[in-house]
Length: 255
Figure 1: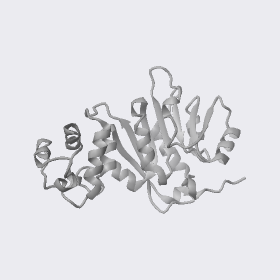
Figure 2: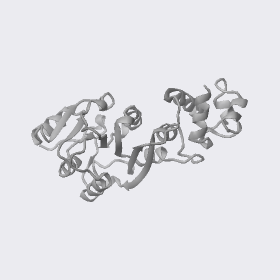
Figure 3: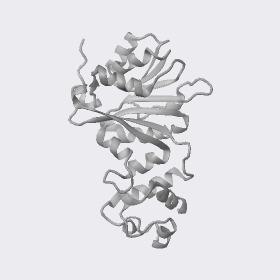
């Protein structure tokens, strides 16, 4: 029976074989690796990954799809976790000694930012992440200071990951087609993370970008003095989107 995509779950199923094969090539799965897929849907990507893997885990919210997956694959090949990826404990997935978890998925666009922040909590357990996301979101993730797309998402994710936009995926690759272009992003937890308290960095960045049109002096008024901004190497008269990750970390360390 044909599964009808559900809007409330943000379902857009990837159906283009050429795009699917390009994604598998970008991921490069290998036997013996521990991998989890978020939102496997109709298992188009799952099926291709399992050709290269001995076993994998998937996290799926839609119970109809959970039943379909459990029927299609034996447990020794596929472990299906029925539930919300936003609440899922990725640290509970068993990983062979000396290895880290690989995470992949065509992420529902309606929860992509909160899901990326949830996954960031497990970055120390992860080897890499490959996700399909709305192109605009990926552009914000990898944006450089001084660009329109640079903001809270850029700073907080670049603090934890080295990231690259791999390639663009058109709406025609999906059923039903979304109204936007998508993109594949590669995220590798950085080995040179700047020392800083994550909660303090989050507080600084949230305050700085709460009023993008104002200069940084006004955005963080009450949190930092002009003297402290200067100590962090920041001109008090610039806008928040021109301040680098290193400078935001310096501010967080002043708190």
